[in-house]
Length: 144
Image (spheres, rainbow, N blue to C red):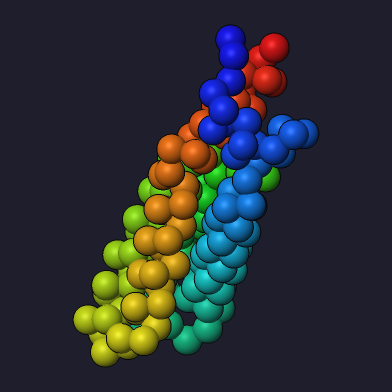
């Protein structure tokens, strides 16, 4: 199966992924480890601090820990250039856009707008046809 010219341009001569993929991978990695750290903080603070409702804090922390594990898995897939990792990364960034909206409504407009911009730009970069073509060409090369 031959590659289209745009896939060759996007993936480079050595089959590397485009710069936008590497930037999106870094953004998803930061999101994953920030969520992982926050979930651990929330869990331990709720359990060992002075919470008003320890069981609720631990439950939310464990839930966020499970979500963070999924985003870390997507991050690892992105590091390896796997095409399946694009969907969970886009889904995670849809949540980031929603968090930005929540921050705007919570009287944090600057942080909210910046959060929404990061999420939207990452989604836009991951959803481009060139990114799809580069990932597909890499997948086909791996199968050959």
